[in-house]
Each structure stands twice: as C-alpha cells, then as structure tokens.
Length: 314
View 1 (cartoon, helix red, strand yellow):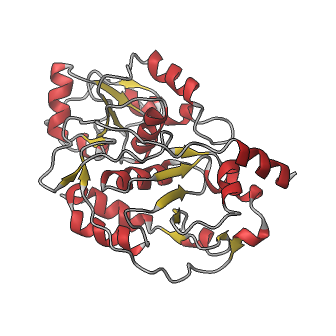
View 2 (cartoon, rainbow, N blue to C red):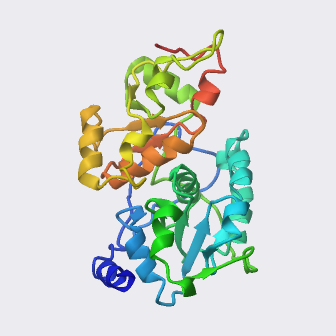
C-alpha cells in the first residue's frame, strides 16, 4: 500500500513553478537592503506528505529538510539528513526589537542550516502547522526563494516513510552555506503597530484576527487585563483552516472561507494572532488561496494589548 501511495503521489507531484510576486504591504519597508521577488518559486507554498514522501526516493543535492520539532521528539526518529531548527532561538530573535530587519543575524542562522540561494527547502513540524508556518514566513521574508511546508507535519508524514528514509539521534553535521539575507519586496510582508493603527482608523485594508472566538471577543481575558480585538478586524480562528487530520484545507475551501469574511484576493489583508505563529499559518493559507497582498502583524496582540495607546474593541 505504501508503494502504491508513493506512485500515485509521484504522478500528482506539485508544480515547482513561480511563487508569488509583486506584493507590497503597509509596514514592509525597512532600512535593510531589498531583493527583487523571485520568479522561480512554487505557486503553492504547501506540499502534500504523499508527494513529499515519494520525492525522497530520488537524490536531490538542492533539497534541505527543516524539522521544527523539539529535540526530545526529533532525536528518537526523523528524516535522514534533516536539520533541526531551534524554534526557541528563531522566535526570540524574530520578536526582539529590530529582529525582523536584522539581515546579519538571519544570514548566519539560515546559512548555518546549509541553505543557499539555490536550495529547495521543505519545512515540517509535529503537526500543528504553526511552527512550520512561522519558519516558512521568516525564510521567505529573508529571501529564501523556494520554501514549502509539508502539510499536516510529522504526524501525517511519518506513516508514509520507508525505514530507509529515517534515522535516529541528533542531526548530522551540516556544512554551512553562504547566504545573504535580504528583506524581500515580494511575498508576505510585515505590518508594524503604528501601521495597523492607521489601517484600523482609516479602514484602508482588511484586518483578520485568527485567534479563538473567546480571544477575539475578550471573553478569555483575565479580570483586569485588556482583551478584545483590533477595531475593524473580523475573526476566523486558525483551526478552522485545518481539516480533521490537521492539514491545511485545499485552495477552493480556503478561498471560500476567506471570501466569507469579505477578504478579496487583490486587496491588502493584514493578519494577526497573539504572538505571530497562528498569523503565519493564516498567511500561508491566504497565499495558498491565491491572495497576493498579504501582510503579517507578526508582533500581534502580545504587543498591541500591552500598549494602552492601541485601541481595542469587544
């Protein structure tokens, strides 16, 4: 049965043509150097586990597999040759002041994983999809031209893998690559707090809150805490974008869900959550659905609710 799945997956292998181009969003301008958007990226930032498992039977010197799981989950079993991402380190750097523009620091981290300009990068996590989406968002922001997320993560992929594709222990030694991070002018952008204040005040872009309904309404806030949402924001909990197996839903379903929130593919959409992970997943979903002007308020409500000057609505 595994062989049959591999054959079918190989036949339906996804296209590796152009990612998304020409997207600029509020707040995406930075002092760091910019590079032109790539024209060689995949049109879908998602790869199905069946397709990915089948691809592992062939050699590919450009392939880099990133595993975002915790060390205690990675060490017992992982894909042979995969490299573990220290998500705690990446999260800390990305959320510190100036972290989303620190090209020197990201050049070091991305290059240390053996990623070069020609690499084809595949990212997976345990199955929640938010960790892999966060890494995807950061990689594409800093110029990795070809990066995709394995749909449903390890829990969906592992049953499809042959024993020969697996290994135990810590990662093998990785030869660092030369990589120069550049903040991209295309792809998913970054919205800053002051940008979102202006957007909410002027209603100049659609704003999507992908936290739970209780977070959105402020019901989950403890007594004395600020709770609620950014004025004008609509709510679509990120879990609704995943199917019963934890996979990101197909493009038609995502388009329907986003359209039901009055989000139009050609117009600017700003997405936020609590700390950036769920918003990164929703941005991934929006790109899959064909939205070309997507921006991530990456600092999200962790920053917004802590600033009394930021308005909230319940």
